[in-house]
Image (cartoon, rainbow, N blue to C red; front, side):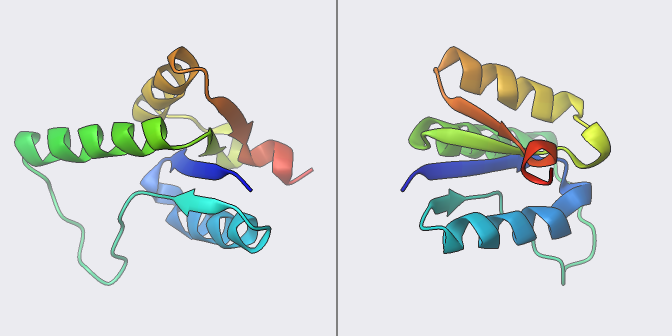
Length: 101
């Protein structure tokens, strides 16, 4: 059993939720960003975005590994920063595209 934080672009929220369910059913604890698909797209203020970014860093700190949902090998700027942060903390990095093979 591992604690795993899901990282990736929110454009792939469907895949994030699917992989979270899959790895949780394998007995892992899953941490992932809050996303409400029933709420219309919201533009966060800079302060709100900074809060969300810091909270996600805390999720990464709590986890033993991060799972990067990189559909079609897409990794955006924010996700790249999350990967680098996790590497600096010595976390295991797992890529979604590798799980799908």
